[in-house]
Length: 253
Image (tube, rainbow, N blue to C red; front, side):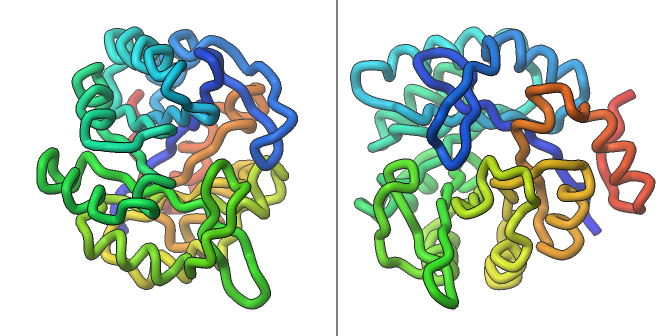
């Protein structure tokens, strides 16, 4: 079994970290630079920033945040939200991001995956998929979970990988913010069909949920927000727990 990663997720709104339930009822959770430094020192493997209300007007805000954070934090940083084109990707990588996460733009312009992977390398390109159960399967949703594309999640994930995506960031819209655990069935169905790492997102409420996402869901990494931001558990606690269960994790100290 390869080493598994623990990745705190920071949802960014107007330059602040926020957390809500299914992307609504957002509450302030702190300053991104301060939280990033804290997680860096705690031994997080990576960080993900999602600019959840990204627009042309506030694009400079997230770039400023990335520049400040990347000067203080020395673990890989993935940034997503509002990325529309190669120029947006270039700006974020130049500002200090190690990877970018694309979502809606990849669906509206599937060539963006291949073009960006060719220009920057697949290791820089993460495709974020927001999935919601529709009858007996899952559909891809866009615009913060507001728009049903009608695309089947598994088929879309396979297409993304074929186009050059280096990772899939898979969020269950049904579980996001509910703290009842990840959708392990969804995770397993996607993980078993693609050849790149799948990052589990949406639903972590306790440390055991991370274990389930890895063992039952076959995820390569686990993304979490609430359990870390509000001090319910620390990254160190999570790693110690997974290590005690025989799951390989990086212990920094």
